Image (cartoon, rainbow, N blue to C red; front, side, top):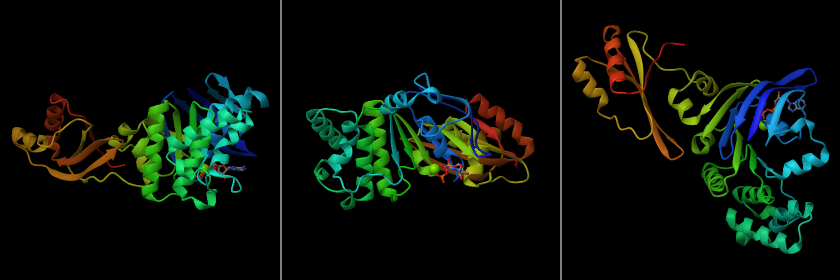
Length: 321
Ligand SMILES: Nc1ncnc2c1ncn2[C@@H]1O[C@H](COP(=O)(O)OP(=O)(O)OP(=O)(O)O)[C@@H](O)[C@H]1O
Ligand SMILES: [Mg+2]
């Protein structure tokens, strides 16, 4: 468990983290999204002790990162694997040697290293690349080596800083599938720092939206996307599309619901007309979620709301920002 409370961080006089609160539970795939300069990498580096923070608290497995000495920090980092956008592999070493590095650092025996590296190569699906140098690998394969190296010491948490930002869409998908698989198989908590919405939609169970050093919103990914919250709209620069007259009602179709005929049935039951303003279906992890905005006259608005309530349908009225 990573518990972040009221963290402030300054570079000189500039405040780059402003009262950051966040709780990342064991086993979660937690996304942190925001534009460039939002403070995402800084926050990640505070979590693993690469950066200091002056105010607030960051507890990783109940240990306050700021108070650890060098030796304790070294031990703590065993539990926190990290991967980056540009892989950070050593070009002079082979794939095997790159993955073996952390194990050598902690003085594992040759036999143990051999066994562990082979296991890891298998896990990330690049067994055949064992003796190759990084320059002869594709971006996706390089990231697989980096993931294997980050997992070498059996960390409890994997911190990913823009891990897929340098990859093409298909390779991104395959790396995300690998991370999801690792989360499921090994129960490792994954923190994904990204500016790619697709990353959040494909694998994150929870998401924090950051801007200018602040957390604008935290919640279940599905909830935030389904409700198309203000913070999310701000992030993607999209306004709610609504008609200026009448009542605009957004009807949500969470996973497992099939309400295709709801709207037409409601129109018949209530004997009203409506227009469809906006509708979309989106894929999240393994589910499809949908939402539909309809516009009815102000006179019919109240009866529509009552009707939806009686049917247990989730809705919200959309008003212009
Ligand atoms: N070592 C540093 N010294 C001074 N300022 C820094 C330093 N590192 C980062 N900053 C500043 O802190 C702010 C947050 O930077 P950070 O790298 O955490 O953002 P980010 O959200 O990771 O952005 P990106 O998406 O571009 O990676 C920025 O304004 C940046 O200029
Ligand atoms: Mg960054």
